[in-house]
Image 1 (cartoon, rainbow, N blue to C red):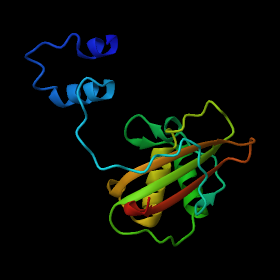
Image 2 (image 1 turned 45 degrees about the vertical axis):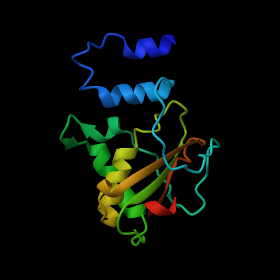
Image 3 (image 1 turned 90 degrees about the vertical axis):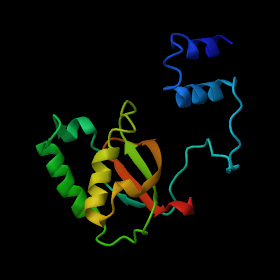
Length: 164
């Protein structure tokens, strides 16, 4: 009950219509408003998966912090990384048309590495190499593996969204 009160506290009545969707979502999460019926989906596995049909390249994932200077300019480190990654990627990959589901697995040698940091750089590189638009991506799955130093890698799988 305290959670429900906390989620709704501090919102004046004149603000509620603007926040109706947010309030409904918050209330659904905490159980005060029944959720609208939705089509049942298969349960998600809580076990960290491995990608069986992935393409992998032996390269340490580059974080966003290493990739960009300010808002506009790629760092020298990112430019070198992009060149190396483009050379390592297979020249032809069968990318389906339409909506996409992408699985990215990062082999980090440092447990403190953030899983989401290398997503943007590698997605930009994959788009450049294979000619798709990340607006087509409807589903991401990210996997973090801890590997020995010097064994860093990125593995990925790109499928039609309906195949997941």
